[in-house]
Image (cartoon, rainbow, N blue to C red; front, side, top):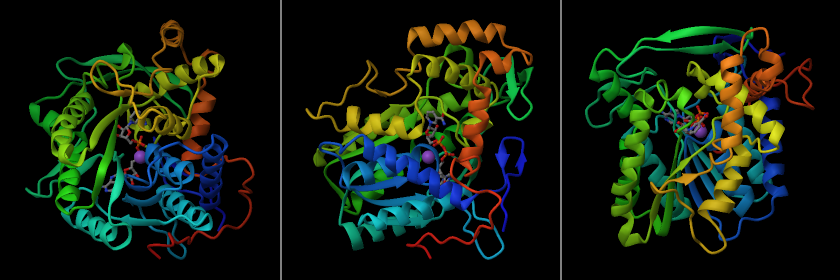
Length: 399
Ligand code: NAI
Ligand code: NA
C-alpha cells in the first residue's frame, strides 16, 4: 500500500516500514563511523527497545561493541492490510540488520511491567545467553498495571501546587500560544505518576533477573532521566513527572546495594531533550526543544538519540580507564551540551521573544517537525513514498 502520515495532535497513526529501515540503517552507520567501543558490553537486555533512546541504545550496543541483544517492547505488529507501529518496524529493521551482521538479536513484544514478560525474558536469557552484562531500562509509558496489586496506574503531566502558564507551540501549525495547566488536585496524581515512571519496575526487573542468576559478574544497568532548564521546571522537574524521576534516581541506591555481591553498578543517565513519541506529549517542552535545537545547531553541538547513546557508551559507561564520570549527585550527564551556559542563555533570550510570527526565524521548529515525522519513518531521505510498500513486515525472532 501507499503509506502517508496521518496525525492526531501529537500522535502519528501511521508508520512507514521502509522509512523505519532507512532510519535504523542511518543510526547503524553513525555508530560504525565512530569505531568500536573499547570494553563495551557483550550481552545486553534493553527494556523499551523499539523507539527513542531504547532503539538507539540497542544499536549502540550491537554495532558499537558486537553485543548480542534482547529487546523488550510493547508494539502493535503489522498484518496483511494493517500497519504496525513505528517501534514494530524499527525492531524488524534492527533484527534484520543485526542478523545480517552475524549478531544475535531477539525480541519480546508485551507488557514489560508484568511478571509474565519478565519471566519470558529470563527464560530467553537462560536459553540463549546464560547471563547479560548490561541492562538498559528505557521505558516510557502513560500507564502501568501493577503486577502485585493489579491496580492500573495512569500517569499525568501536571504541575504541583500552582497552575503553570507559559508559551507552547502547535508544531503542525506553528502557532505559539499561552497555555495554563492546572495543578494536581490530590496526591493520587503524584503517586500514580511515580508508580508508572518511577523506579519500582526497574527494581522489580533487577531483582527478578538477579534471583534467576542471569546477571553477569560486573553487570551494569542504566535508566534515563531528564532535568532541563528552569523554564520547564513547573511542568517537568518540579511537576508530577519530576517526582517520578526523583524516585527513579533514588532507586539507584537500592539496586546498587542489591548488585554489590555481583560487583554490579546501577546508573541514571540524564539525557538531552529530544523529539520522541513521549516528549512530544508534554506541553511547553516542544517549544523549548525548537529553540534549543536552533542554538545547539548553530554551535555545532546538536545531537540526536543515536549520538547521545554513542557518547553514553563510549565516554561514560565504558571508558578506556573504566571510570564512569558522574555529577555531584552520582548521575551520568549527557545533557551537558544542552545545559551549557551559552546555549541556555540563547534559549532564555529567545524564549521571551518567541511568537507565531518569528517562530521559524528564531527557532528550529522545522527541525522539530521533521524529527517528529522521522520517528514514524516519514520524510527520510532516499525513501520513495509514492511507491507501493509492503506493510506486513515481521520481526524475525517473533515471526
Ligand atoms: P519512547 O516513547 O520513544 O520509548 C518508549 C519505549 O518503551 C518503547 O520501546 C515502547 O515500546 C516501550 N514501552 C512502553 N510501554 C511499555 C510496556 N508496557 N511494556 C514494554 N515496553 C513498553 O520514549 P523515550 O523518549 O525514548 O524515553 C525513554 C526514557 O528516556 C524515559 O525514561 C524518558 O523519560 C527518558 N528521557 C527522555 C527524554 C526525551 O526528551 N525524549 C530526555 C531524557 C530522558
Ligand atoms: Na526508548
